[in-house]
Length: 252
Ligand SMILES: C[S@@+](CC[C@H](N)C(=O)[O-])C[C@H]1O[C@@H](n2cnc3c(N)ncnc32)[C@H](O)[C@@H]1O
Image 1 (cartoon, rainbow, N blue to C red):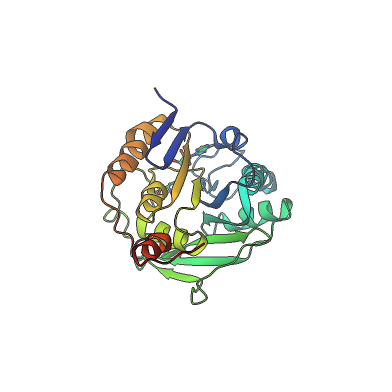
Image 2: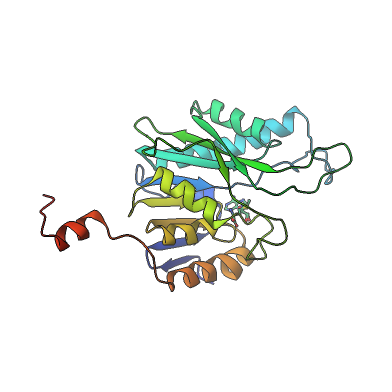
């Protein structure tokens, strides 16, 4: 089966992202928008039902996060952004990984799901996940009205469009893409899953590189999904250059 698939302006790669990202051209990507495994079941005692490991588990998880984050930073342009998903359990490990590689986290966006999820008897019912923003030295958010809470309704079981358990909303990915890149920019998702970011990148007129390790997700879900998205018309406003040409302006 093919492990390198091109769909229009999207390149989809199957494999371990740590190996694949090492092959990317340095300083070539405008935004890394990605939703890594939360590593909350990575317990070295072998208790598959446990959610909280000891210090060694956190250290191991943070080491792995730091490895791919270093490669993400290497791929980013000097004005690029990383947007990395997590939840309250994965947050300490993620922050530790960023600090290990001395990459400052600039913001934490709360994704309010506008839906109350299931929880155990000792727990509060969850309604949010988080996205960490870490900018490169020249990064800036052009939309100065953008806040650190984003409401986007997502009801477990009802909102999903694929069989991937961790699918995220296209609307949320489109929001992150618009905040951090310009039309024509290059977005990388190194943990593509069902290909949500690829669909969002197409809809926002951005180029895309997606990586996914598992065959069932890559060939079974992400590739067909990005192909289906690319067969739909893009409802984008014309690029400034096209408007200027229509109106007879010379943008130099
Ligand atoms: C949380 S899911 C991403 C879900 C995605 N945001 C979506 O909307 O469908 C993380 C994905 O990363 C993949 N993955 C885990 N380790 C990987 C690795 N080393 N390289 C590439 N993909 C990996 C998993 O198979 C899983 O599909």
